[in-house]
Amino acid sequence: PVLRDLSRDHHQLLLLARNLRGDGKRDAAAAWEALQAWWPAIEAHFILEESCIARLAGGLAPRMKAEHDQIRTMAQNPSRAAELGRLLRDHVRFEENEVFQHLQTALTQEQLAAIGAQLSHPTGLQACRL
Image (tube, rainbow, N blue to C red):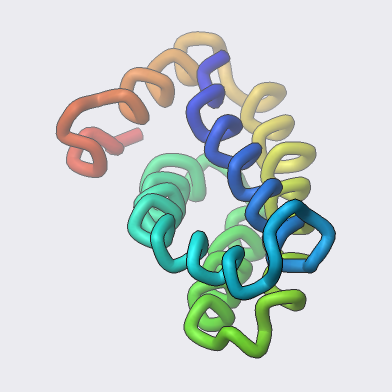
């Protein structure tokens, strides 16, 4: 439950990834337009993960950050839409299945609650101090 908002974002990213790969309801051009429209929210999501989650993710953090950087780079080049879609899909699965599972196993309920409070804090990134 603590990571629920990030997981909701991940669900939306999976839908976008499917469309970018050409497997969804939208064509690639429409999916690219959606990516550009959603980019500020995607970037905010990455920043939250990098500032609140990464330092608690142990050895998984370097991959998370590296994939965020790859996604940022690919998101500037429409000719890489399908490749970006595959990376987004794989990245979301990695975070859900490995990073979030690690956090739920390695951290106490109190630590998880603190993360939840920080992620929902109205001042956003300024609250991420674990």
